[in-house]
Length: 72
Ligand code: FES
Image (cartoon, rainbow, N blue to C red; front, top):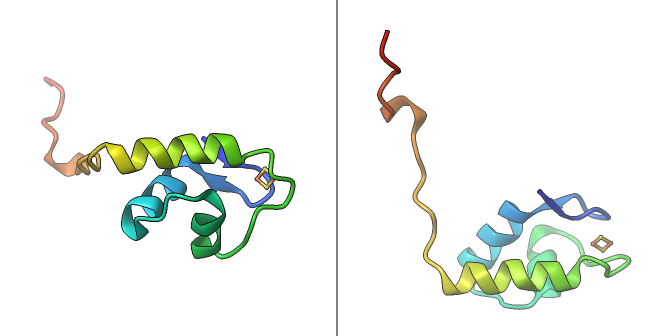
């Protein structure tokens, strides 16, 4: 899901950047991603995404090749 339409930032990018950097401010996370906010409409939602990312452990990556195939 897109959080920031102006910059095209998805929830997953913001979440991963917050976790990797430990930054808890949307403006700082956006700067790491390569830009700053434009209209600012997204900042409250980005802050919620960052807060959730920093208080919960990273979701494990699932390798689709490891999943069992459906019964044939
Ligand atoms: S939607 Fe993020 S700055 Fe405009």
